[in-house]
Length: 500
Image 1 (cartoon, rainbow, N blue to C red):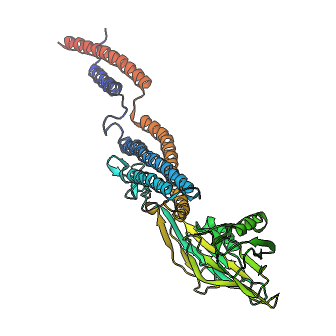
Image 2: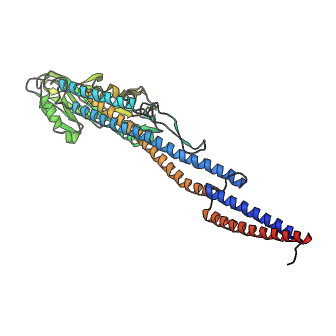
Image 3: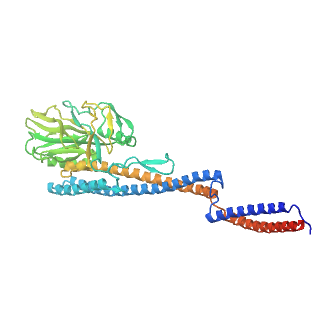
């Protein structure tokens, strides 16, 4: 057998191979045991930095999803609360509508008001006390609450919920002043409304142009055509009172025209205008004008609900003896029911058996009411009585002040509740929009979490198939290196014995 003097080199080579195989085996075993490809900075310096950033982003997304769920839960509580408040408002409105019916007695309306007061108290209690995790939701204090949707400070949504307290739900409104214009003796009355331009500033601004002779109806229609821009709606009505009929002889009648429609030969007395009411209402489908008894049977209320001018023309009586039959016409504020301005007296004077030329015509210009469930302002108003919008005073009436114990109060309550319903529905719409926005954000975060988690796994997690194969290879290399080391050692011993 030959003696290899370089056997020590073979030993060194075997030892190095054994060391490398052991190192490779240890690395693979560590990765398989921990499940991680990168267990320390020395494993992959760049991967440590990148994986750390990815992990922060992933954890931020996961917490953001939890934050979204929490905020959506709070918004859902607020929405359910508002849903019940809407139910209470609808019930109040039903009582208000019921109370406006003329068949109800004063006692009936007092009972309605008791029910309304209870519903108002319940609605306000809900708005005041609804909460989530100790935070009030519907009382107006839940403002600018951030929803953090990831680890980035800029990635957040600010959410506010408007108050549903009944002390702030209701109607903002501005009232024009209705008025009368008498015709000159023997001539038909003509509207004296003069032109103006009014700017309504609500959600946004819009100009309303009012021409000469324009009716309240036309103005209200113009306002309503801009409601989507301003958030302000227009309501028009015309109402007048007829009373103080004097000097009509017994069993005699009066006649006049409403517009061009004749209301003929109504046999009435100063204390009872019932026949006139019946004759007017018989022509309502033509004139658009209704009649009802006022405070007494000697008082008559004429009204329409669209704001068309009411023209009374050619007032005359069937008196034959010399006399002056008179009838007072007074404008009425449709919202309050109060008289506005001075009465105009229509006169039929009989002298020498003939009817004289007198003031026998008057035109009633209606009232424009601008309203919204939010504050607004007016410019271009004019104090002149010939203008349909004479002031820029914005009045308010809220649900907390609703009173249905009178017919007028009940009628106004309907307007207030309608405005309040619009306000709460708008709040609910905003809540719904925020919930949907958060849902969309959650969908996005869920989708981007997947590729980021995949990338993080590829960087940090061990490939078990690969590492198992590497470990097997390393173990074989260890066995072979050990065998070769033994062989090298055997040769070295042989060499030593030969030298000795």
